[in-house]
Image (cartoon, rainbow over all chains, first blue to last red; front, side, top):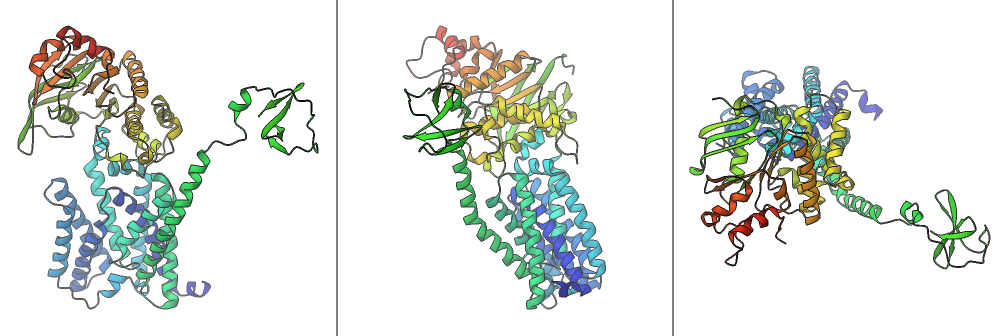
Length: 324
Length: 265
């Protein structure tokens, strides 16, 4: 780990991976909640069109891809809100755009699968700036975005500007996709937005915990995958997504265990049940005196000791024993 | 147009078409401050459409809607309204009960702020009121249908609204909790809250309601005291809440049946 940190390009790559791992599940949580899991794929095509445009004009690809993605996402969202188009039409539009921009397969591989060595200092600055914006919005507006993504109609009766929030979510998703093309690549960014969220849902309960858990999984897989790709000298995107899927596969049996533990915790327990203690039941006539070492097993019960006596629990009380 | 003071919800001449078919045809309805109005009608009579239209969830082709005196378009005071929908996408799961209920405070919350103590208390109170205190950390999808319905009611109550708009709030809720909810509603009404309640069956809420508006085929066919409903029985014949079959009781028994809390088993 020390070795790879000594290369400046690798430092940039790991920071870029860390930021991608933070933002992709953060925005992905809302995308999944809105049942738009395939949004990332569609936006990947639009980003590709942006890259094509950048290659044609000889400008930096990331800023162009960010702008193209936001524009594409907003247009598709407005069409969707007007009921004129579904997400699929947007997908087709993205493919069409990348087609007319004249981008061939050559030279695009690094954007499709991610390429750590190509993250420039300028790219990193832009990624860091936009990542801060995305995190501030996805975490700071979490209650509003949650409500809008889960129950749009109710959110409207709370006076939330639902359309504005929807456009915010798809725009942030667009930015995430465009930024992730260096780390995970455009083909697999959609997976990094969705898979950690799915794994987190298996592991924890509730929306807020799910958001936190998904981000943790995203960071672990993005940084781990980026580091692994350095040693094996392969595209980072595949490693990152493979790790994320590994988390998801493991989360299945884990979720089963977690659920069983929760179910077990609900079963009534013998000890510390105030109601049983409150119901004062005196034992039948009981000449034997319990004491430590009297032959009856002693168990601690709250602030006193019970003695197991023929399947009952006897507790000393004044001049008699109570059933506990 | 002047709205008399104290009218919290007023719709006039409301016409709504969905997919080219008229669902509401010139409907007028008003809820005055402190009043509890039942909205009755058979399946497809336009009850839910009317409720959703006055809340701005559906567009209307003609007519006016005013909430607390403001035209719908200018209305911003959404914390005064608590809506319980008939169905909610919030029930698909992935949220704790308390997270669903906390959404009912959003109209009062400011952006980029953590949940203030007052809001947290209001959420807890609302959950306790509907009897879900033990389930507040459970996933909403793990609850039974009746419990989910109570969670949606808690969400509307959490905002401490002045007007409750309830779309079949007690359908699917067991008898015991129907009474619990009726008590909660009674408490709110006596504290001055107004309510518009869509009902299929008057049930245990009957004694709480001041007035009934009956829709049939997108038109208002009755607007008045619940007790007068009997006179309309012939016109409305066939609707479950009025006529339970050919052996239905004579007219003078309708009032008793509607007010007496008869509930379908």
